[in-house]
Each structure stands twice: as C-alpha cells, then as structure tokens.
Image 1 (cartoon, rainbow, N blue to C red):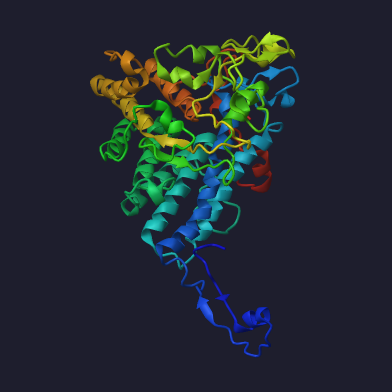
Image 2 (image 1 turned 180 degrees about the vertical axis):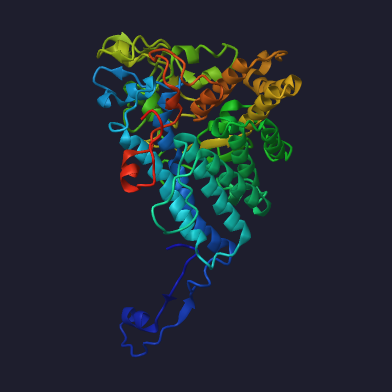
Length: 497
C-alpha cells in the first residue's frame, strides 16, 4: 500500500467477529484514515507521492542514451563474428549512415520516451488541486529538461505544454530554445536550494542552472547566436553556491553506492532489484568476465572504446583506470583463457567487422568507470547514473571563459579538474587550446553522454575517424521518426533525410 495514500482504510467489528467465531450484525464502517481526491497533495508526503512516479521515467535516461552514444568517437560496437551484427545497426550508428526506416525503432523509442514523460507531467500540472509553487516549479523544470533533450537531438520539435488539443505544431529550434529558457528562468525562484536527502535525484535550483547552462553552451548551434557570458553566469550560480565539491577519489562518484557523492548535481537513482536499467558491465565485459566478478550471468561482450580515444589518456592520468585492458583473471586470480588463447584486452580494434574467434572477442578497451558490482546475480547494477556533476560545470565555465578570451580563468577551472585526475603527478597547465579543452572534456566525461553534443559544438562530429568517413552536416540532427510523421501531419522531416 502506498504509504501516503490510505483511502477508505477500514476495520469492521464484523470482520473481527468472524475470525473470533461470533456472529456479527453491526455493519457500520469506522473510517480511520481517508483522503479525498480534492484534498490530496497538500502535505509534503502527499506531494512526494504525486511526483515520485514522474521521476521514474527519468531513470530510462541511461538506457535511451547508451546505444545512441555509438555515434561518437568514444564508443564503438564492433561486429564480432555473428555477435552484435544486429542487421548492421551498430555500423550505421558509428559511420553516421543510420537509416530513417531501418532505425526508426531507435529514434521513435527516444522520441516516445521524451514525450510520454512530458505528457505525464502535463497531466499532473493540469490538476487544479496542485497549488504548491515549489512542486509546480519542479515539474516545469523536469518538463523543460525533456524539451531540451528533444531539440538537441531532433532540432525542430513539438512544444508540449498542455494536455489535449489537435496535432501539435512543429516549432523551430530557436522557438524551443526560447521556451525552455523562459520555463527555467520562471521556475528557478521557486525551486528548492536543498541538495541530497529527499531532494536527491530531483530538480532543484542548481539542476535548473545546469540545464540553462547546457542550453547556453550550445546556443550557437541551436540559434546561431553564442551565449558564453550566460554560461558563466549559470555555472557561477552552481560553483559559488559551495553546495558541491570534487571528492579526492574520482571514482567514488561512480561507486555502487554513489548517492552521497558531493559532486553529483543530478543523478537517476538505480537499484539492481528495485529500479533496474543500469547495466554497462553487461554491455562491455567479455563473457568470461562473469568469473572475474562472480556475476549471475555472462556479459554480452559488445561495447568498447577506440584505441585513439583510449590513448588520449596519459599513463599518469588516474581516469585511464576507468578502462580495462590487459590480461583478465577470474576471482581467484587465475588468468582467463578464451579458446586456448590468453584473454588479453587490446585497445586496438582491427576492423569494424571481424570474423568469429578469440581475436575479435578480446578487441577493444572495456568500460569500468562505474564500479562493477561483484557477486551481483542481476543483470542490472545499483550505481546511480550521473547526468550532471560539478566537474562538468567547471569545464563548461572554462570553455566559455576561453571563448571570451579569458584564458587565465579557463586554466584555473581546467586545472582544478586535472589536479584531481593526476593526483601526486599533477602539473598545472599554463596554456590551452580549444582542441585541448574538447579532449579534456572527453577524458573527464567519457560515456556520460555529453560527447555528441561536444563534438558538434567543436565542429568535429562530421569529421572522419577510425572506420568512419566524413559525414554530412545534416547528420548533426537525427531524423524525425517516421512513425511520428505518420501520426502528426504537422511534422516535417529534417534536411538530409
């Protein structure tokens, strides 16, 4: 039973009498606790019960982003014999040749995830009994976040700000940008400044500043007009609040129990049994790594990173330990052998499509930035997935400062991030370039799903990289799903599709 809603909870003397073996003629109900629909949602507990389910959808952020991250240079899913062939979809994503028909399921899945969650929020906001200003601001911020993702991925999309109506009109990217900005600016004064505890994983004032900062960081891409000074303003609000800090241990923010990390601005709470969906270890580890971590099932041996990305880390950079290379062992420390050959992960991937065999199965550095949950009998882990964190805010402010010509301020923020990464081997940078800022963001934020956006902003997304020729600029947007075009005559396809 929901602990906040106890409607019509009754205990009758008749029921007790039957169990006691006596007759009962008094059928009068005695109501001990009752909440009517028009009065529910007035207490903090009731408000939490109303909005809690709306955050459940945010937990699907990881699942929706994990596969599409293959369009970047930090993630690759090579075909290993018959494994991970999947009709060529991973090659299409990697080479930017995705198809509006063959890959409609992927794009429509993301679109539905976004707008189904927006619809649920709109139904709650339409409830005239919801009058709490902080809760309304929180839901408007969550709704704005989904719209921000929609326009970032698909460009000209729908602004869904109410329930019902005819087929909604398609809005330009600039119109969506302006609407998201206005929603967040209006919401911020009424948002909570509390972090952690019951506010963990929820939209507070600093999450809103972060979304606005991302909007402004990419403003030139979205609208044609850069907004670097506004990026700094939003990041100042987060950094100068002193609500967040960089823990000395980089990997503590990605531990199985990472909910108390002082760095996390927004995360989606996950749990191996109660709220599943977080499974990078299954996607990336070799089948035999089941014995390394005593897992309940064999991993799927798919996702890896390319050698160039792995080699962008210096050996003294502790973040390099977020990748697995070299000889693999079982839990007893015994070396693993695949089909008679030592199971040694090599950063080099010889081809995007490889013939079956141990060479294909061990190609590519594997991901372990998120602590792998040992002795876990479930396919999902309990690490909370981090969407926004302080290091990203520092790097965003550094980039904006640099683009405005303030190199000294940019170096201060970048060196603050690098100092943690290098520990005792840290040496402060004295010069920096835009390419180096992008590389630093890549090393710090690998597989946190910022890379596509960063590559586009730095004009690198359509360039050639290993196994990928240069792609058309139109690939910076995904196609509007064909399914949605069929449902809504007001939608038009993006150029190039």
